[in-house]
Amino acid sequence: MDLIEAIISKDLNRVKYLLEAGTDPNYADDVANITPLHYAVSNNFPEAIPLLIIAGADLYAQTDDGETPLDTAKGLPRNICIPTLEKYILNSQKESDEDFNV
Image 1 (cartoon, rainbow, N blue to C red):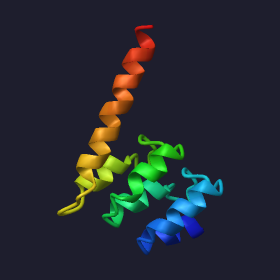
Image 2: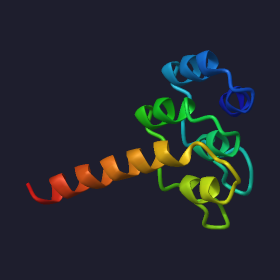
Image 3: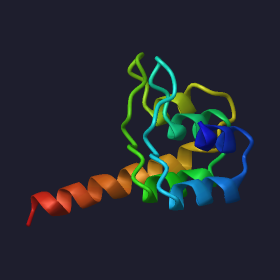
Image 4: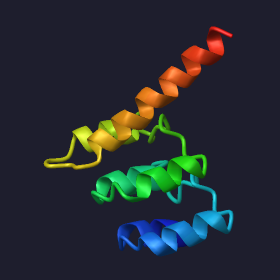
């Protein structure tokens, strides 16, 4: 898929263009259920994370092995995506708590 190719090549402008054009940010192109967010993390491409999340990427999407994007990041040496993912996870939990307390 073009989005995954753009992420692997770290082409931020192409990622942005494809997401704005309506490409599904949760599309998994293989039987292992690896999403674009997993690919961004695996390729140490934190700049793509906000674009994917704003477009609706699932922070908690799991591969067939049950691995979330954060699990993937933590399993890789010197992965610079962890702080970005943790920030968005924390924000999503706060929003969920606020919705619950309404």
